[in-house]
Length: 403
Image 1: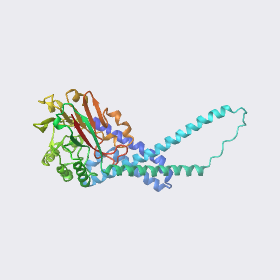
Image 2: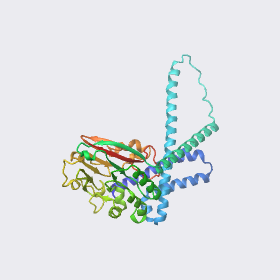
Image 3: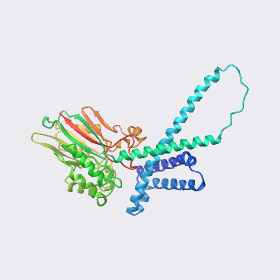
Image 4: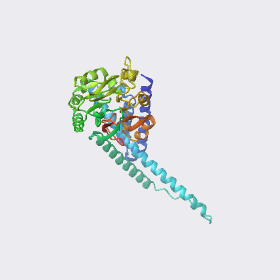
């Protein structure tokens, strides 16, 4: 197992252990009484911790049908547990801050007292009241966490928001001024996202009347045999200059060569480290596509190759680069690329990752600029892992190029 994958699995396992211990201490012990209910809760927590920590090994050993059910249950519980932890942590941090403020206020009052008082016994603790308050707070956190999970699930499966913005490209021919590129990315067709979602996504995209559709990777989480029927909806995309696809890291996991052939059979052009001309004699620009940034780390795979993609291109022509990960943007900008269109980050997808994704990626979500070049990083149309989005709603991006 590669070191990076092992480290990621170890981190997931450690987070699962700590999260479940916290939930047991703050939720189960407060709300459940009796040995049997607590024992069952411990059993569920131990089972889910083991599945999360050794998910890949376990799923590879299970039959396909059972593995799918386990995957859906595991990811759903992961999202619910995270929402419960967020609600409890918010409550505990709030209580801690209130306690600190009370102590700070009490100190000046005590120092100002001039008459010494006789020492007195501390007031008796009402255990029944303390137990009731603990249960009430735990119950409130449970309701809040459950509500957050329900909202996140609704947001994940509801239609993506449409983000429309103009990007100035000085080298763009005036004949193409106003050309629109609609970006679909990180759909993650798989156990959760299937036919109904794909049909609605295609309908929503066509309603935007794009000149060109760019599908920038992480399309699937599974093989062509299992998911080809759902992905075939993309063959109904309509645009002036057609649809184009570049690979993402999950597409490599799912069989990049097989998916490339399948998409091409749908009439979708796949750009694997190459460029094509978009337009006609009246005006055109170069659409450049590269394989996923991490694709070359897999055995016998070439992966990202910007030099090959730009080979033979006239640098005086306007260019748009499709690249799944928002990596190497500044190098691409220095090579004359006017606009890079990327995804991969999901904008964090779920709080609190939405707060920390910027630490991992310099360009994490939205529009950025370097010299005369731009990059747009989409939050993605779908989701990966927990079927929820909180703080980072899905989006379809419509980029209008202006000269």
